[in-house]
Structures are given as C-alpha cells and as structure tokens.
Image (spheres, rainbow, N blue to C red):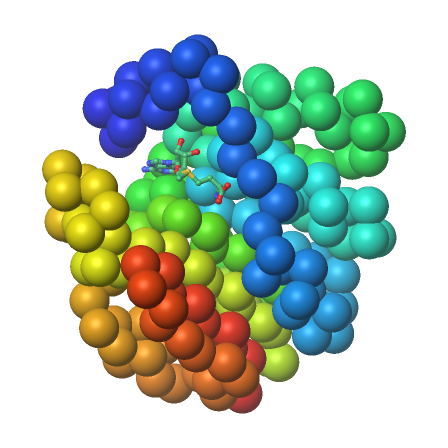
Length: 178
Ligand SMILES: C[S@@+](CC[C@H](N)C(=O)[O-])C[C@H]1O[C@@H](n2cnc3c(N)ncnc32)[C@H](O)[C@@H]1O
C-alpha cells in the first residue's frame, strides 16, 4: 500500500536498519534446498546472509529506500540477491516455489495462504514477529500488526510445527510443509 511505503520510507530516511535475526542463524539449515524468499526484507541483512550461504534469494519490501540500501549492501558484500520493491499484497508468490520462506517482523494476514502454497514440499517457514504483549513496551503500537496468542499455530495448522514459542513480546514459529 502507498501509505506503508511513505511511512517506512520515512523511517529508513531517518537511518533505520533491519538486523540479522538469531532465529535465522539457528534454523536456516533445516531447508533442504537453496531457493529462498524473504518477505518484507527491510535493508536486506537476512537475505544477504542466506545468499552468502549459497541460497538463491528473492527478497522484497514495499520501501524503495530500504531496497536501495539492500542492493548497495549486497553489491558491497559481493553477493547476488534478487531485491524487488513490491507490496506484499501484490507479490506473485507462486506455488511450490521455495525451500525456505522468511517472515520477520511483518504481519499481513492476507498472505498466510499464499505463503503455504509458495512453500515446496518439505519447505521451511520461519515466522517471527511481535505479539500483543508488545503494547506493554510500546503502548501506541498499532494492534493490527500484533499477533494474538496461538495465532500462528492456527494459521499454519496444516504445516508440521517444528518449533513454536511466545516469549514476552515475540512469537516465533518454525514449520515444515508436509
Ligand atoms: C519491522 S520492518 C522488518 C524488516 C525485516 N524483515 C527485519 O526483520 O529486519 C517491517 C518491514 O515491512 C515493510 N513493509 C511494510 N508494509 C509492507 C507491505 N505492504 N508490503 C511489503 N513490505 C512492507 C517495511 O518497509 C519494513 O521494511
């Protein structure tokens, strides 16, 4: 959405950076193949990490500024990542396309089914974002971007859950497509 782009571009102009997530370091090795997708990739740290590990990565974000920074970083690091400026609701996820899908700190419930379809058989989903406890830390945080208790377990019930936890304000799910 155009609003998301304006809002996030402002943050990236102010110097915001995304970060490499420990959950990725812990679980990426579960993927059996090397085709990966990073949804709402921000400035690309996680996608670049995967590319360095030999993955063929597509990574998209609605913010053209974030993607510009990500492309620059990938060039500097001498790795290839297919970075795209795209809204999650418009991205063509395809079917049985990815061995690994990352969804870090982004919540768009309308793409849940597309994520499931886009995983290859035995493909791994790594999903981590804030839950409702987050309002204890940031009272003004928009509730629609916060997971409810057990929400990911329900949404991805038809995947094999390999790991799930809700610790304080963060929920993590690692799942495999049967
Ligand atoms: C909290 S950041 C997370 C970035 C990165 N995944 C990470 O964990 O470091 C949320 C990201 O979602 C992107 N975003 C917001 N709305 C989006 C949309 N509708 N489609 C695609 N990306 C979107 C923002 O530009 C921002 O980069």
